[in-house]
Amino acid sequence: MKPDQARATARLVGGPAGAPPLSLYMRFLDTGAVRTKIVEDDGRSPRWENPDVVLEEAAAAKSPAVALAQPSDPTVGAAAGTDQRLPAEGHSYVTFAGTDGETRLAMVRHDPFRIDVFLGGKHHASVNGKGLFYYEHRRERDAAAAAVAASANAAAQKGSANPGGRKILDWGEDGKAIYAEEGEGGDVASPDAAAVDVPSTDGDGYWEESFKEHRDSKPHGPMSVGVDI
Image 1 (cartoon, rainbow, N blue to C red):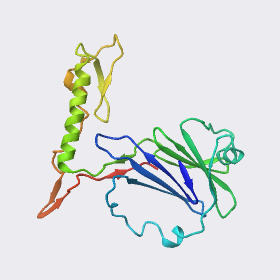
Image 2 (cartoon, one colour):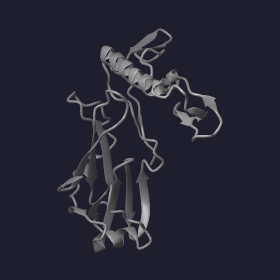
Image 3 (cartoon, one colour):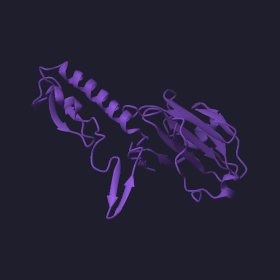
Image 4 (tube, helix red, strand yellow):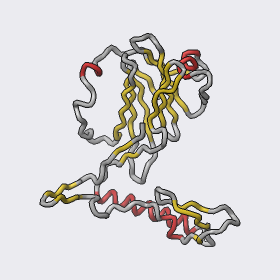
Protein backbone atom coordinates (compact mmCIF):
# COMPACT_ATOMS: atom_id res chain seq x y z
CA MET A 1 0.00 0.00 0.00
CA LYS A 2 1.17 3.50 -0.86
CA PRO A 3 -0.66 6.40 0.81
CA ASP A 4 -0.62 9.68 -1.10
CA GLN A 5 -2.45 12.61 0.49
CA ALA A 6 -6.12 11.59 0.42
CA ARG A 7 -5.75 8.20 -1.20
CA ALA A 8 -3.86 4.93 -1.04
CA THR A 9 -2.94 2.70 -3.95
CA ALA A 10 -1.94 -0.93 -4.39
CA ARG A 11 -1.61 -3.57 -7.11
CA LEU A 12 -3.60 -6.80 -7.16
CA VAL A 13 -2.04 -9.79 -8.92
CA GLY A 14 -3.29 -13.29 -9.69
CA GLY A 15 -6.30 -14.56 -11.61
CA PRO A 16 -6.60 -16.72 -14.74
CA ALA A 17 -3.96 -17.16 -17.43
CA GLY A 18 -3.21 -13.94 -19.25
CA ALA A 19 -4.87 -11.71 -16.65
CA PRO A 20 -3.13 -8.35 -16.19
CA PRO A 21 -2.53 -6.92 -12.71
CA LEU A 22 -5.27 -4.72 -11.28
CA SER A 23 -4.79 -1.30 -9.71
CA LEU A 24 -6.57 -0.61 -6.43
CA TYR A 25 -7.39 2.99 -5.50
CA MET A 26 -8.82 3.92 -2.11
CA ARG A 27 -10.03 7.51 -1.90
CA PHE A 28 -10.72 8.84 1.62
CA LEU A 29 -13.30 11.62 1.99
CA ASP A 30 -13.78 13.97 4.91
CA THR A 31 -17.31 12.59 5.28
CA GLY A 32 -15.70 9.42 6.60
CA ALA A 33 -16.44 7.44 3.45
CA VAL A 34 -13.95 5.31 1.57
CA ARG A 35 -14.33 5.13 -2.19
CA THR A 36 -12.72 1.96 -3.56
CA LYS A 37 -11.93 1.59 -7.24
CA ILE A 38 -10.30 -1.36 -9.04
CA VAL A 39 -9.25 -1.10 -12.68
CA GLU A 40 -7.15 -3.09 -15.12
CA ASP A 41 -3.52 -2.08 -15.35
CA ASP A 42 -3.08 -3.19 -18.97
CA GLY A 43 -2.09 0.08 -20.65
CA ARG A 44 -5.37 0.38 -22.57
CA SER A 45 -7.94 3.13 -22.42
CA PRO A 46 -10.08 2.83 -19.27
CA ARG A 47 -13.46 1.13 -19.28
CA TRP A 48 -16.59 3.23 -19.44
CA GLU A 49 -17.69 4.58 -16.06
CA ASN A 50 -21.02 6.08 -15.11
CA PRO A 51 -20.30 9.74 -14.28
CA ASP A 52 -23.25 9.90 -11.86
CA VAL A 53 -21.96 7.22 -9.47
CA VAL A 54 -20.03 9.74 -7.36
CA LEU A 55 -21.34 13.29 -7.00
CA GLU A 56 -18.86 16.01 -7.89
CA GLU A 57 -19.31 17.82 -4.59
CA ALA A 58 -18.44 14.64 -2.69
CA ALA A 59 -15.36 13.96 -4.81
CA ALA A 60 -14.22 17.56 -4.37
CA ALA A 61 -14.68 17.60 -0.60
CA LYS A 62 -11.72 18.53 1.58
CA SER A 63 -9.47 15.50 1.91
CA PRO A 64 -8.55 14.18 5.36
CA ALA A 65 -5.04 13.35 6.51
CA VAL A 66 -4.17 9.79 5.50
CA ALA A 67 -1.37 7.76 7.06
CA LEU A 68 0.02 4.27 6.70
CA ALA A 69 0.02 2.86 10.23
CA GLN A 70 1.21 -0.13 12.22
CA PRO A 71 -1.12 -2.47 14.13
CA SER A 72 0.61 -1.42 17.37
CA ASP A 73 -0.24 2.28 16.87
CA PRO A 74 -2.73 3.63 19.46
CA THR A 75 -4.91 5.19 16.73
CA VAL A 76 -5.26 1.78 15.05
CA GLY A 77 -6.26 0.05 18.27
CA ALA A 78 -8.74 2.81 19.15
CA ALA A 79 -10.48 2.58 15.78
CA ALA A 80 -10.52 -1.22 15.57
CA GLY A 81 -11.31 -1.96 19.22
CA THR A 82 -9.43 -3.93 21.83
CA ASP A 83 -11.06 -7.23 20.84
CA GLN A 84 -10.02 -7.03 17.19
CA ARG A 85 -7.08 -9.16 16.11
CA LEU A 86 -4.62 -7.05 14.13
CA PRO A 87 -2.03 -9.25 12.35
CA ALA A 88 1.30 -7.63 11.51
CA GLU A 89 2.04 -9.87 8.52
CA GLY A 90 0.09 -9.82 5.27
CA HIS A 91 -1.95 -6.72 6.13
CA SER A 92 -1.73 -2.97 5.58
CA TYR A 93 -3.33 -0.37 7.86
CA VAL A 94 -4.45 3.08 6.73
CA THR A 95 -5.90 5.67 9.12
CA PHE A 96 -7.85 8.79 8.22
CA ALA A 97 -10.13 11.29 9.97
CA GLY A 98 -13.55 12.64 9.14
CA THR A 99 -15.05 16.05 9.82
CA ASP A 100 -16.27 14.70 13.16
CA GLY A 101 -12.66 14.36 14.28
CA GLU A 102 -12.82 10.60 14.76
CA THR A 103 -10.16 8.38 13.23
CA ARG A 104 -11.21 5.66 10.84
CA LEU A 105 -9.18 2.58 10.01
CA ALA A 106 -9.03 0.70 6.72
CA MET A 107 -7.41 -2.71 7.20
CA VAL A 108 -6.33 -4.28 3.90
CA ARG A 109 -5.58 -8.01 3.83
CA HIS A 110 -3.22 -8.94 1.01
CA ASP A 111 -4.05 -12.59 0.29
CA PRO A 112 -6.86 -13.08 -0.30
CA PHE A 113 -7.62 -9.42 -0.97
CA ARG A 114 -10.06 -7.88 1.52
CA ILE A 115 -10.79 -4.45 3.01
CA ASP A 116 -12.31 -3.89 6.45
CA VAL A 117 -13.30 -0.45 7.77
CA PHE A 118 -13.45 0.31 11.50
CA LEU A 119 -14.64 3.30 13.52
CA GLY A 120 -14.97 3.81 17.25
CA GLY A 121 -13.94 0.26 18.08
CA LYS A 122 -16.54 -1.30 15.79
CA HIS A 123 -16.39 -3.01 12.42
CA HIS A 124 -18.51 -1.11 9.91
CA ALA A 125 -17.96 -2.57 6.45
CA SER A 126 -16.09 -5.20 4.45
CA VAL A 127 -15.14 -5.44 0.79
CA ASN A 128 -14.65 -9.01 -0.45
CA GLY A 129 -15.29 -10.39 3.01
CA LYS A 130 -16.75 -13.57 1.48
CA GLY A 131 -14.11 -13.84 -1.23
CA LEU A 132 -16.54 -13.32 -4.12
CA PHE A 133 -14.44 -10.74 -5.97
CA TYR A 134 -14.64 -11.46 -9.71
CA TYR A 135 -13.05 -9.51 -12.55
CA GLU A 136 -13.15 -10.62 -16.18
CA HIS A 137 -10.23 -8.93 -17.89
CA ARG A 138 -10.30 -7.77 -21.49
CA ARG A 139 -8.96 -10.24 -24.04
CA GLU A 140 -8.06 -10.44 -27.69
CA ARG A 141 -9.55 -13.51 -29.35
CA ASP A 142 -6.33 -15.11 -30.61
CA ALA A 143 -4.42 -14.26 -27.44
CA ALA A 144 -7.20 -15.67 -25.25
CA ALA A 145 -7.18 -18.96 -27.12
CA ALA A 146 -3.41 -19.24 -26.77
CA ALA A 147 -3.54 -18.53 -23.03
CA VAL A 148 -6.22 -21.15 -22.46
CA ALA A 149 -4.28 -23.69 -24.50
CA ALA A 150 -1.20 -23.03 -22.37
CA SER A 151 -3.23 -23.47 -19.17
CA ALA A 152 -4.73 -26.71 -20.44
CA ASN A 153 -1.31 -28.06 -21.37
CA ALA A 154 0.14 -27.18 -17.95
CA ALA A 155 -2.85 -28.73 -16.18
CA ALA A 156 -2.58 -31.92 -18.25
CA GLN A 157 1.12 -32.25 -17.43
CA LYS A 158 0.36 -31.78 -13.77
CA GLY A 159 -2.27 -34.50 -13.91
CA SER A 160 -0.10 -36.94 -15.85
CA ALA A 161 2.65 -36.55 -13.28
CA ASN A 162 0.56 -38.75 -10.98
CA PRO A 163 -1.04 -41.35 -13.29
CA GLY A 164 -1.41 -43.81 -10.44
CA GLY A 165 -4.06 -41.51 -9.50
CA ARG A 166 -5.04 -39.06 -6.92
CA LYS A 167 -8.63 -39.73 -5.97
CA ILE A 168 -11.50 -37.29 -6.43
CA LEU A 169 -13.95 -37.03 -3.54
CA ASP A 170 -16.12 -34.24 -4.92
CA TRP A 171 -16.21 -31.23 -7.22
CA GLY A 172 -16.23 -27.66 -5.92
CA GLU A 173 -18.59 -24.92 -7.07
CA ASP A 174 -15.72 -23.49 -9.14
CA GLY A 175 -15.46 -26.75 -11.11
CA LYS A 176 -12.19 -27.80 -9.51
CA ALA A 177 -11.62 -31.29 -8.15
CA ILE A 178 -11.49 -31.93 -4.39
CA TYR A 179 -8.89 -34.65 -3.90
CA ALA A 180 -8.81 -37.31 -1.20
CA GLU A 181 -6.01 -37.81 1.27
CA GLU A 182 -3.97 -41.01 0.94
CA GLY A 183 -6.05 -44.05 1.84
CA GLU A 184 -9.46 -42.41 1.31
CA GLY A 185 -11.93 -43.63 -1.27
CA GLY A 186 -13.08 -41.88 -4.41
CA ASP A 187 -12.90 -41.98 -8.17
CA VAL A 188 -9.46 -42.27 -9.68
CA ALA A 189 -8.46 -39.02 -11.33
CA SER A 190 -7.40 -39.34 -14.95
CA PRO A 191 -4.63 -37.12 -16.36
CA ASP A 192 -7.34 -35.05 -18.04
CA ALA A 193 -9.14 -34.35 -14.78
CA ALA A 194 -6.71 -31.60 -13.81
CA ALA A 195 -7.76 -29.60 -16.85
CA VAL A 196 -11.44 -29.49 -15.94
CA ASP A 197 -11.20 -25.99 -14.47
CA VAL A 198 -9.60 -24.43 -17.57
CA PRO A 199 -12.15 -21.96 -19.02
CA SER A 200 -13.26 -22.11 -22.63
CA THR A 201 -13.06 -19.08 -24.90
CA ASP A 202 -15.27 -20.43 -27.66
CA GLY A 203 -18.59 -20.97 -25.91
CA ASP A 204 -21.89 -19.43 -26.95
CA GLY A 205 -22.04 -15.77 -26.03
CA TYR A 206 -18.32 -15.43 -25.33
CA TRP A 207 -17.48 -13.11 -28.24
CA GLU A 208 -20.99 -12.06 -29.31
CA GLU A 209 -24.62 -12.28 -28.26
CA SER A 210 -27.91 -11.90 -30.12
CA PHE A 211 -31.16 -10.39 -28.85
CA LYS A 212 -33.85 -10.99 -31.49
CA GLU A 213 -32.61 -8.95 -34.48
CA HIS A 214 -29.89 -7.17 -32.49
CA ARG A 215 -26.38 -8.57 -32.49
CA ASP A 216 -23.99 -7.45 -29.77
CA SER A 217 -20.32 -7.94 -30.61
CA LYS A 218 -17.87 -8.33 -27.71
CA PRO A 219 -14.40 -7.77 -29.21
CA HIS A 220 -12.76 -8.11 -25.79
CA GLY A 221 -14.82 -11.07 -24.60
CA PRO A 222 -16.97 -11.02 -21.43
CA MET A 223 -16.12 -8.15 -19.08
CA SER A 224 -18.27 -8.65 -15.99
CA VAL A 225 -17.11 -7.62 -12.54
CA GLY A 226 -18.47 -8.29 -9.08
CA VAL A 227 -17.62 -8.17 -5.37
CA ASP A 228 -19.43 -8.72 -2.07
CA ILE A 229 -19.76 -5.77 0.32
